[in-house]
Image (cartoon, rainbow, N blue to C red; front, side, top):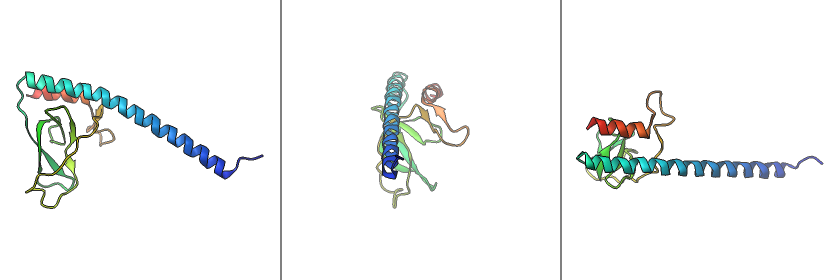
Amino acid sequence: MPEQPHDRRAARAERADAHREAQRRQRAQESAKAQVLLDRFVDEARRAGIATEELTARPWSGGRRYRTGISGWYLRNDGSVGVDADGRYYELVVAPVRFGRWRTVRVEPTAPPLQVGEGARDGESIALADLVEIRLRRS
């Protein structure tokens, strides 16, 4: 007897769920590896005497930067990625905020990727290990 449409849909949904779960596990493993790199960066930055500064966020629309109240180090020259003094990773490009120039905007830490800027334009993606090394040499 041929397969019923609802059986095919259920099987397809089950495969999609399994695929999503595998991706989630892979991202978690990559984030754990990336967090080790960030913790090492924070230790080396402190040992090298690299001063922290207040991290600011840039709105997607461009324009002036917003204060975040977070102290840490920028990893990219354009200030789009930063790490706070506790090793938490921040993406510092945010949605425009009304009165953001005059108020502190809230930026949440995100799971660190092993490849920063993945999916971006050519030349904008870089391995986190390389980015951390470049940042340590820059100071």
